[in-house]
Amino acid sequence: MEQKLIVLVAIPDSLSLDLIGAADVFSCANHFHKDPVSNYKIVIASATKELTMTMTNGLNIHCSCSIYEIKDQIDTLIIAGFSADERWNKFPQLVEWLKTCSAGIRRVASVCVGAFILAEAGLLNGKRATTHWRHCKELNDKYEGIVVDPDPIFVKDGHIYTSAGASAGIDLALAMVEEDYDCNLSIEVARWLVLYLRRPGNQSQFSSLLSQQLSSKKPIKELQQWIASHLKEDLSVTVLAERIAMSPRNFSRVFTAETGFTPARYIERLRVESGRRYIEETKYSLDEISMECGFGSADTMRKVFLRNLKISPFDYRSLFGSG
Image (cartoon, rainbow, N blue to C red; front, side):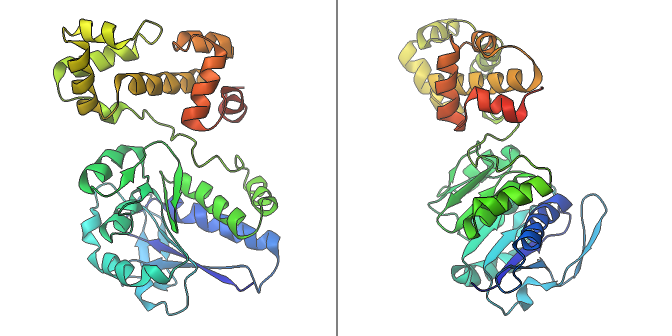
């Protein structure tokens, strides 16, 4: 097995964790793997011709080289995120380089809004992808050919990987270590870094995921806000339609057009998010939480959690509960 060249691309005004988090995972993997012939060679490369990058926290990172100077075969390329004040179209040289060079790279990945760089280069066309939850709607609206999923902390589609906000880059790097070696090495790295071992890729991003789907139409928006405060009640289409004086059929059509979800799917996701909050922040029993969130029973809540988050409420509490 040959040494694998891991290149992390630094962009001005990035979160340092976007770069350092993933780099530390690969570095720790080298420490435990102990085979200089087949380990990782880690390079921090500049997206510009300047080698010193100032991060959002004021930290200066000195890059080994510019991405455009690398001649060796890149095994894994990771594009870091950057400040929301920056725009992805400010990096045309990087986009053009990706269009030309990405096909020869085994894995191409992004952290946070680095996904927009991949999208600009056309690498996400026809693929499922994610980014930071605050920017998922923008990614979806700007690029029609991408299936944007705001839920997972990272997504793999073919040889393209996208991840959510900064810390998700660590989860992505751990998953890559497991792909390259085995779960024992990723476990060792996670323990060393005192991390939750391999949060599932489908684990939902920790945020108010549905806030970005609030309708611009006042009646629907007000109804959405009312639903969030009445999850224990009967929230059938008939009840909701009657509340805003619409026929059930017209209500379903308008609601879906405005939010991107059917009423039933929207309510299910709100109940899941509410359930997560109760699990994270309270010591209520799962039976009590299921009633508070409108699931009706702990068994129903378990099935809905598994369908949406790929993890049971019990396991979710083990990882993220208040103790």
